[in-house]
Length: 150
Image 1: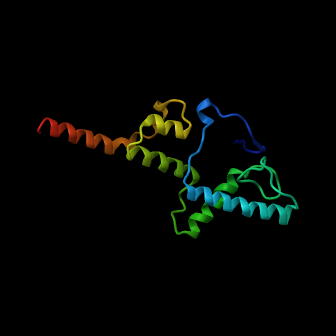
Image 2: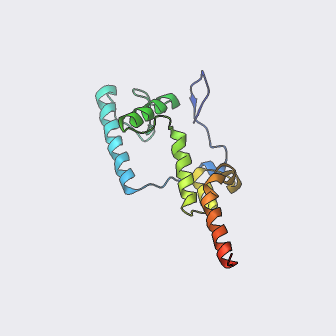
C-alpha cells in the first residue's frame, strides 16, 4: 500500500518479487491476532451492522473497508508507547530496524534477513545494517588474534 499526500491509499503490487513474502510469528502472536480479529468482528457488527469478510484489512479504518492510514497507525503506536512507558520517539519503522539488527547480531545470515525484510538483494541489507555486524567483526578479530597467538 502506498499513501501519496493529498490522495487516497493506493493498493499495488510490491516493488520486487522479494516484497511478496510470508510473515512468520509465534503462537502467542497468532493468539493475539485472533483476539484482535474477534474485537474487530464485534465492532463491525455493533457499529457498522455487518460482518467482516476475508477482503477486510487487518488494520482498517473504522466504518470502512479501507486500510488504516499511516497517520492513524502512527497515532495508535504512540498511544501504546505512552501507555506502556516506552520512549515515544520510537516508530513502526524502528521495530523493523530493531528486528533486523537483532537477527544479524544473533547470527542470522544476511540472505535470510534480506528475505524477511523483502530486500531483493542481500547487499541492500548489508548497506543498511552494517552497524549490526560490529559485534561479529570484534569476535572475528579475537578469533584471528587467538589463532596467531597475539
